[in-house]
Amino acid sequence: MTATDMASRPAAPRRRGLLGWTWKETRGFLFVLPWLFGFIVFIAGPFFFSFFLSFTQWRLVGDIKWLGLQNYAQLLSGEDTRFVQSVYNTAYYVIFHVPGVLIISFAVAGLLNRKVRGIAFYRTAFYLPSITTGVATAVLWYWVLQPNGLLNNFLNIILDPLGVQAPNWLGSTTWAMPGLIIMSFWSVGTTMIIYLAGLQGIPQHLYEAAEIDGAGWWGKVRNVTLPMMTPQIFLTLVLAVIGSFQVFTAALIITEGGPADATLFLLLYLYWNGFRFFKMGYASAIAWILFFIILFLTIVQFLTARRWVYYEGERA
Image 1 (tube, one colour):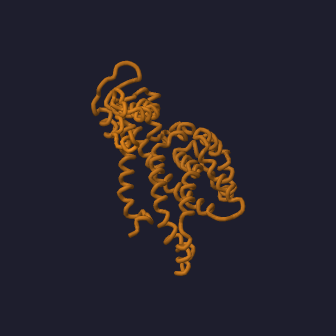
Image 2 (cartoon, helix red, strand yellow; image 1 turned 180 degrees about the vertical axis):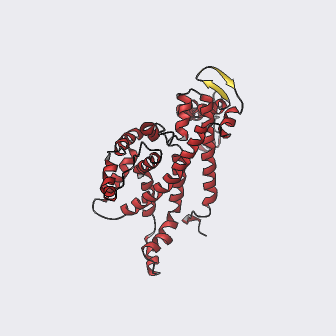
Image 3 (cartoon, helix red, strand yellow; image 1 turned 90 degrees about the vertical axis):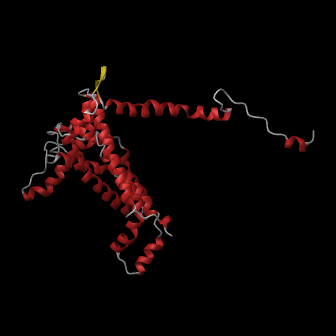
């Protein structure tokens, strides 16, 4: 048999197993099987089970009692005043935390986007707090926010001559939430890194053109930096809103939702219902309401992004 005859012969069909898969396909499935198992057992399974539980009454043990929409009706009717308070507290936190984090991160990134000696050290120093565990950060700020803590000792230097007393950050219903918001600005490192990468990607010739047109510092920021940074601002805005609705560790460790529920967040109230009051169905209903709130706000942000987010690659 010549080489030409061998080349013209049709290839032998690949052997297939019971499921009709080739060995290559089977091997690929075996590689992804551990991840698939973990996804089904630890993510997808609890996800759908919590949706089922939100229509029931279950105390972790015993029978599951079907309630229909009763859990949702109780939550949305305003009958549960602590749930209403937790929604208000979470909204309060989001309104002040999100703009604060974006502005501070942007300002820090602008300062670190300079060629000075030791800039790598400064960038590392500003980023390190963002990788500190939430519990360690909460314990640190618990001592900072004490009446005789570091923050009040600093404020007393300024306020004592004016006859004003420094706030009782953790013991006052007025100042507990601002205290947690101030603490949240400690971990701006991740957002700062995103902004820093965006700033370094802005073409230098745009600033030069702005200078030729007579633009000063603010003119270059307003007409060059901000428009070119809108993709990064949009990304960090979406992530900040999602993350701020899920604040939990600080309130649990520092204030435990107090004083007088002044720092009772939605996620903390969900945790209480599930693992303190053992109302798993009710806690699941809170989780799904929180999910739909975040989903709605995320969709709104994506729909409005077309009006203000500028992508350089989309230019005609």
